[in-house]
Image (cartoon, rainbow, N blue to C red; front, top):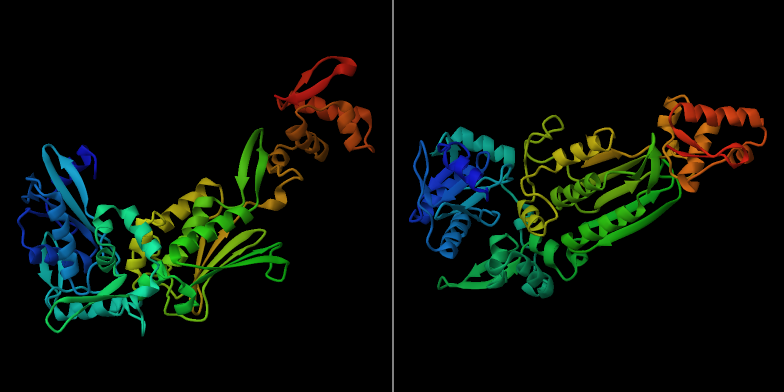
Length: 469
């Protein structure tokens, strides 16, 4: 939405189920009503500094910082407080607009001063009792990440990690880091008898993201990484257990996976290509989604990722949340841990919009691999990625399948593998590789590769050698 043409297209739309306009002087409660209505429906975008219905008119906001604070305060006025990405500024001619996005698939039901609303058409409508009951059943109304563990203290948070996060966000967070964490659902703030704001206390989410020692509170918040040499768990293996705050745990686990995946170069047909056992982007999506969306109330087990000779298995505790099923997994959005997801998005580790499954499918397709397999277990969710068929690779990591499909025999395949490293080959070289084969057969093998346009013959008689054409 930062480009002029995108803003023009947005402003040309009428208000609808996922779009609303508000003037700069709109009351905080009116903004909060629209945010609640989006949150209880399919999400949406609120444009502050524009008005109109059939065609929006951009008026702009004069004080950008104050307007941004107004939107964030409106989000905090919701019950429970609504966690939003930072509002984005966009130019439209001489006017500056602010765009607040409410993600789809939130895990809770929201209200304002006891009033439950949902976006219908271009208006905010009260939820009828039956509709509210269905929504409460679909989403549930308890969020583990917002809970405060017994005896929790703000001293359990690592100030260096908090300040590093605030610097990444910018001035909105640097000026008052703990207040910004409150907006992200990472801390709560008590209220004194006189109504003044009191001390901050970390929530479960805050401790998972910024604690000095996550393991002290949540031993289940670990990532177990295992590489098996073969196709079964019984084979020899190498193991690593990662226990850290979630952003650092994701980074450490990703580095380990990239280091332990099989990789190399190969000749695919007549071209040399680098290859990895799995598309790195798909592996990253499986890892981050498992960490961001698992059920942290499940104790006794963490995220487990197994690297096998033929596949990667990524298991996360907790079955699919809300209304998401295996059948609608790609199309639907539902965030069990919206606060964790937002902070991980702030770190650049995950997309808040929830398109990780789509990207995983695309990455696997682009690599010529089968789509990911998704399966619910008795107490969790399992993603399986099929890897490059390493068994089809020659001793130098060369994919020989295309040559076999072209009808080349084993001696000709051996000649091309030899050329992948040595640049040139002679009759004598191939004869040394196949001492039991006659010189005339070797000559015919190489001549056939020349006739096929695979090799180029250079020189005459005893000085003859062959190179890739």
